[in-house]
Length: 426
Image (cartoon, rainbow, N blue to C red; front, side, top):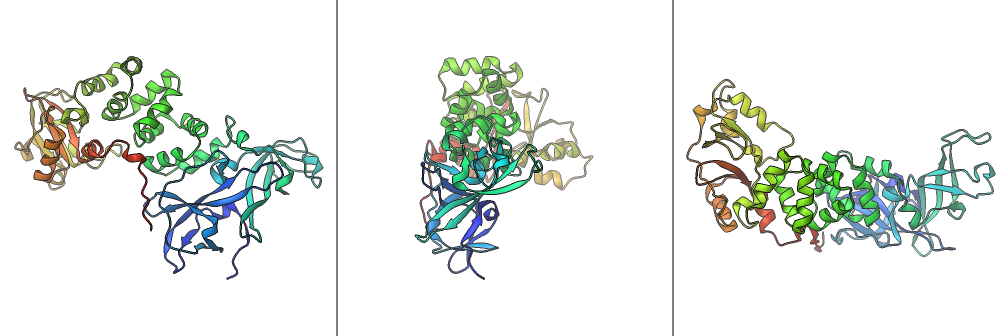
């Protein structure tokens, strides 16, 4: 098959990336381009490749041996796993450039002069120096002009495109709908990583365009510094809505990084029912079981049936760790609850008839943590009992919450661990 020497970048998205021996490395998700200086053609600097681990890395175009209809082949299977960081003069072709609003002065299309056009695609071509440069741009008109129909596509040379600059890419509203469409079906952690790759202005604009629930899920996967930076750019009312949609333990971690006055201002804007569990968490030291627990584990009364308990575990919004057991208490069932009676493991629920009462299969001897237990004690708990969720009970026997293994790991890992980049070779 003859390698391609020119290609439109949108056609690259989704292609398999192969090493020289044919081993699959990942798939192309975008192309990084340099925004041209006056009189210079912009260059395609490299590919954004998504590995099988969902991590996205930068692969320089100089590593590309060939581009074919079904795959991109590299000169080496060893690639740097460092995450992508765009420089001020760089942009993501699909994530930022496509869907841009521009104009053209192409003499072959005088009817389109002074007409707003949308960028549909960029054509890149390999030069004699082996560099890949942007040569042509596919444009679409949103208005009818002369004999041309609305929505008709034209392809013009790059130097006849007006308004495609780094400054224009950061204009409000630019390409938001297209960028958001790329997030559909992606896990919150992957969206968080993508947002962190973008310039601050672009990141803030896309964050503002996400609905409250989606943004809350994404924020929970970001380092505290990025969380506070995004919230600081929002109106206080929107910031409070986002916090209400987040898990209380994540909100407590976030507010714990803020000055007390700012944290209290946000708490006071939240619904009292949403802020109450956060306030209780903030009373505990962050290096204790009480400081890392979630106040919203799955809780039922002793009179609940197996079917009712299983229905709680089937909630798609809870994590697998939280779904591993249901805690049984005397009323009230909101934390702090009535007297803690024990737990029912989800595996046990699956073995019992739906009409059976959870009281009949109760594990009343499950080990417990206290809110003041240090993280070392929590770690020993999980290592000793082979559980992924632990109840936190006060001296009076009330269930206050539960610690999941992932909460513990998040607390034990070095500060800023989300920022640390793997630099190993694949």
